[in-house]
Image (cartoon, rainbow, N blue to C red; front, top):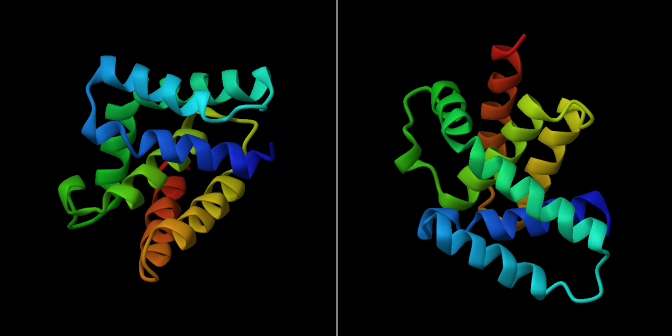
Length: 135
């Protein structure tokens, strides 16, 4: 799988997060990975580990997003946009091997697929502010 395909699978799983508790999320992860029949064990493990890592840092990610969304609280942000930003902010803050520009670009690409036309500018702007805020 390409990294962009892996990121899309992570998005699909993470999109379920607001609708499930911790125990249910583990079931959702397992269910989602079972649908990826024929994919390498390495990719499946990477997806599981990254989803769990993002969930583990969700409060930090949400605080950073909310701080950079001047005048917006998380309840006003669409679930797809919020999910995409959580993944990108996680990559920006915690994954040194993912260049910040790649995290932003991949987030914008996901936004083009899963959100309305105006969302890509919003997501891009917020992620730009996140990058500026960390220096």
